[in-house]
Length: 436
Image (cartoon, rainbow, N blue to C red; front, side):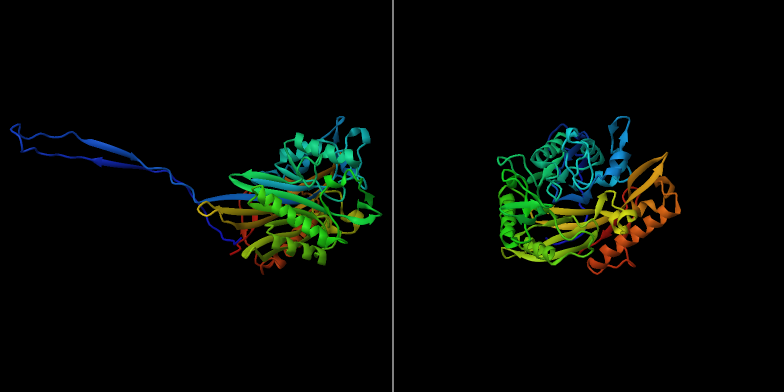
């Protein structure tokens, strides 16, 4: 893929030809005769569009810790709607909105719980759908928290809320990846999570042995057997291409927690997947932001560009400075990738890449904790509207914005935090990079 910026417009025009003819017939004895005025209306054929633009947006880890369960319990029921109210316009502007679902929907019979074994009320899935999400990666290091039954039930709850799961499946008759038609462009979604060291013959996730009858339901890879598992990922890419995918997008649960730089394994995997033809890689698990990189590679003798977001950070969680002595766990971003398909030759290229820094604002109101994800570029000009009232919250929001912009700009294409490019519009305040 190559990247440019342009706008495509389609117009339908009507051509009106007015013919006013006054003719004198001298060939007959009837003498002069004035012909009637004639108006001819000719309708042109609609011009076929030359391009299709689609925007794929993504966020990082969506987590519900125990304090959040308490905060979201109202009148004998759970509701998570307020978490997303301020970012909803950004989420809903995407043609395909994705996130990493780092919890399970194991059901109320097991008892709802936060860390270390997440079991979240089904109401979260409803709130995510209402907020604007379309697809959720379901393969991560907490996928097995409520056992095989939880793996299957999580898929069911996601689908019942008209969301698309990818990374897990209910049985071997199903596919663990998804291919979605977005305005005529087929986008393939796949997700893999890292394994912890094996326990005898058993693969493990978070040191939990994966039952043999469950192994095939979760897409995983092992750092110890990476060369073998990279071939598995290569086969996945080929399978998705064979099923019609024109754009390949991977969510990878990888890296070291709380590290702001990708580790050598992440780099190796990203470069290998670029060679295989993966177009976009969204990273999760470190719980802090990591840089963005554009990898130029060759696929079957053809140049290919791969966008890698090594870690999207936390989109929603209770991981905060007060508990971890780490402010970066409060930070996240919405990454927006606009792709353009040339309808004349079916070539697909990056057209525009942008991001919106986000921050989890936690405060107390009427004796209850409130969690709100806020879009920082807009918020800091409208503090009270976004419930930023205390000096502490304002400082933390400003610090989060500066930190996020520095991490992304300092690493991406030589653009620095001192020379940002903004496009400011209410509810459309994207931090933009024109990648030529």
